[in-house]
Amino acid sequence: MPSSTQSAWPEGVVARYETAGGGTVDLTDDDGPVRVACSGCGFGNGHAYYPPVAHRLAEKHASKCRRVPSPTA
Image 1 (cartoon, rainbow, N blue to C red):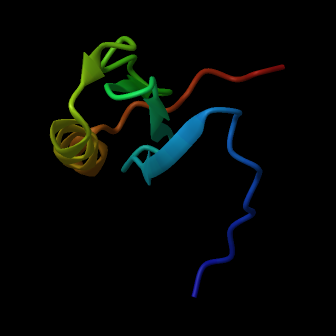
Image 2 (image 1 turned 90 degrees about the horizontal axis):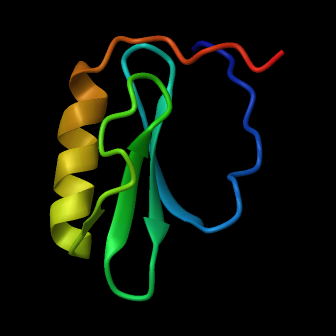
């Protein structure tokens, strides 16, 4: 089993999907609509969707996105 390190989610993130490229698709609750943003390719660009739609989009995108997130340092 591969070992991975878990880090705390950013403030406001209510769900997170790991991408094939090692990034994440984060869902942020906006008091009703949910914002979607991929850390690898920028998918979603923070656009808001109804929660069920946001989760489906995030899960589908995460399974296909292979872009590696930009380094932080």
